[in-house]
Length: 128
Image 1 (tube, rainbow, N blue to C red):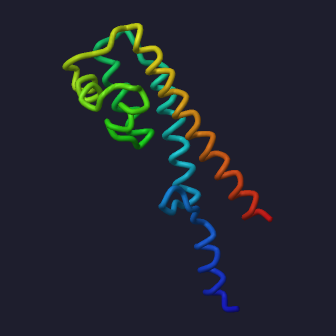
Image 2: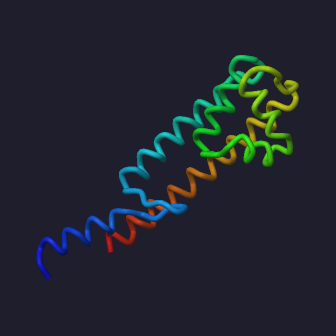
Image 3: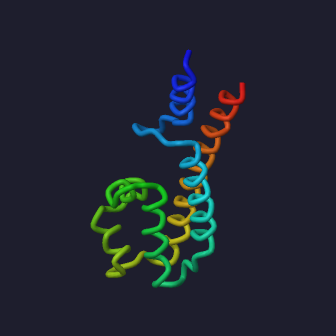
């Protein structure tokens, strides 16, 4: 086998298939860092603030890569409700904000665990 062929094999091994796309290990590490810092930010939002709650929702959608409809389905509200919340036209009562924040935190934490496990399994295979 030629050295060029080995380089191609190593390049291909560094890509990991994730939900319909391929990511490099470096991209996975960057995504994990982004999710971890996003989770910290989400947990620091003041849920009583009418300014911060919509920001938390938008950050959650970005981190979780979900649409208004997907978030609405998960929270058992309508898509227009999510749209109104993110655009500050109407916001949920304070009692509803904590469960929303908890759901978001759990989903982001699940995504972190999943990507972390994937990265660890890749490192285990690549190191073998």
